[in-house]
Amino acid sequence: MFSKLRLLLVLLIGWTLTATAYGAVVHLNSGESLSGRIQGMDEQMLYLESDRGFGVLKVERVDIRLIEFDAAERNLARKLGIGLHYRPSTVPEERISLKNWLSPIDSLELLIGYHEEMDITHFSLEGRFARVVLNEGGHNLFLGAGAGFESEEDERGTLFRLFTGSEFFPINYPNVGLSAELGLRRQQGLGSTEQGFYNALAARYYF
Image (cartoon, rainbow, N blue to C red; front, side):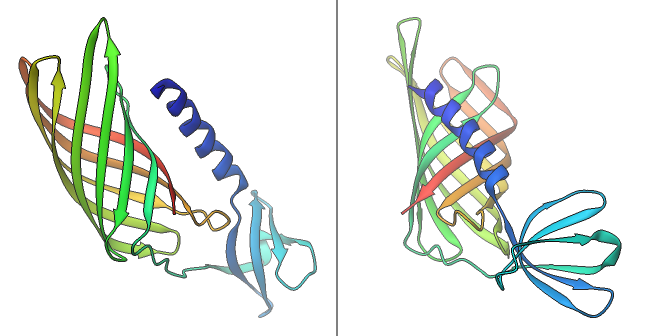
């Protein structure tokens, strides 16, 4: 089941990033300003879908003085996100994510993991708290901590982590959140004690 969810995560990230258009105001050297959504950009040209019905405008980059991106804040209070949290490693972690925003900056998340390997059942449950420390348009920079337990048959261990990361909300798909995080993870029990840095990706849909 989780391998299919991981494939869905990869496809969702790729599809969302290629489909995203960024709202912006383009200030030209002539003093004129153009507003709309940026559809693409290369070394010589910027493609802007005008919000005044002029279609897609081609603007030479040498004529651009400043690009001002839409910095409207999002209010996620009382929204619930459901998705997948994936940590690549020697034994990858794939967990169901349930994330509830208590306020525009505070969130609680529950990570649930389950898989079977060589007739051994692995189960994990982790609670996490995160706080947004910087909000810039469609990006949130957050800090957080989590604690939980893991089990393999009759053995149990504890898990603690501190983390930071960024969650990105595409303008065209405001209910989709894509995040990346880095952190310090410590696991005790299950026959050993492990501690080290980790990275993870997540994709969620918010209701």
